[in-house]
View 1: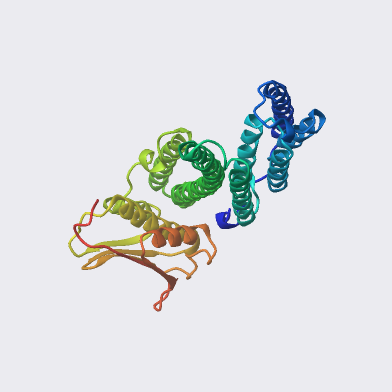
View 2: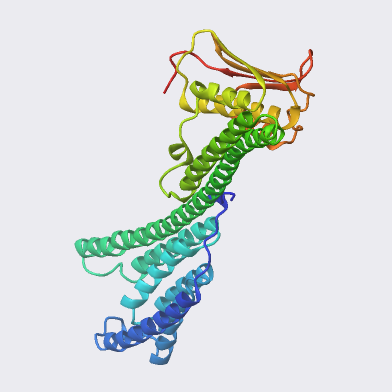
Length: 414
């Protein structure tokens, strides 16, 4: 899932619920402003000659307050309308100022918090604030210049300019802060969505990888034992009348192979049922120290087997040791199933920079079961995991050869 460029992010408009709330807020603020207008008229705070008629004052109050109902849907237009209406009401002598000045601050805040075009929102807010201070200068010079002495005029100037500066700055900055908060929340939601998507993909890959690995293990276990059992059963059938003792030996080998296969399958199924255990934890360790068991079973199946270890054996990591076991097991299984061989040569070489596995038979050169067989696929996967190298194909002297080299440094067991 691609990340959203936050420099181009535009805040979504208000929801339907927010629009309904804004309508009620606009109506409520308008009603409060009207009540305050009639209360203010009794105070006679303005020169009676400069006070507009009551119907006009009502219109000015409503023109300033009711647009609040659309302040989040159209923040740019509403801020300009409220600002213009506020100055118009001041020019015409509207007596209501407490609520309407608050509405002006709210419009500036809403433009900062909801403005879609950030550059335009900034220019409009600065323009409105500048117009308000220009109007304050005009009022102070032409209407309040003769009020009291210097101390009174200084106090009035402080009240008008410093206090209003603080309120305007607060509205401006809080609007930006609200927009930044929503922007950061959106970024966090996007990142959380990306993380969830990545986790789902990783989980799917892990499940697929586990299925492939279990399928490979099942193939290695079942194919090897069933192949040996098939050869032993064939030998038993041929020797049943001529050599009953040999037939009994073959049947015993079939029985043992079946028991071993069932035991390993049971452990594998136990791994699938276990929620907290992996297959590696349930399947018994099968490593290079058990390679001779594979050759023994091949010998019991009627092959002439040569098994040799060259070099000084060293401890191997469990995963590497198990991979070596499964590769030799698969190579021997393919020989039993496809090669129609008479002899089998298995050599393990401990080299200075790794370990080499060499399995060669004298069969018809078909023990690889094709380039796309499950056995070769499993070999390639195991070799790739450990950065090894795999060679397979007909041997120059006849038969088929599988040779694998794993890089490994002595003392690297973890």
